[in-house]
Image (cartoon, rainbow, N blue to C red; front, top):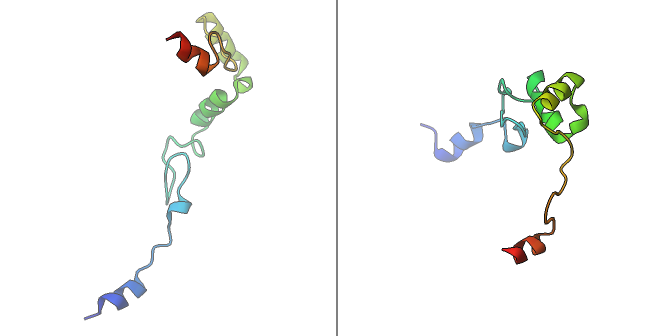
Length: 87
């Protein structure tokens, strides 16, 4: 019967926390919805990150729905100190 110290010598896990995908957390393989695998999810991720990557078709659809898709702009009290003082 092997001793506990000898058993640990033979135990091996070639995967570590460093090997996980930063998007889906997959170690051995990516999830189906991961941006590294699914082009539709990758497009959505890129559009949220950079509004300039929105296609003309999607721009027209969003415009028809009354949506303004662009970089964040401050419409009110941008300074958190000012916002806290008004409350």
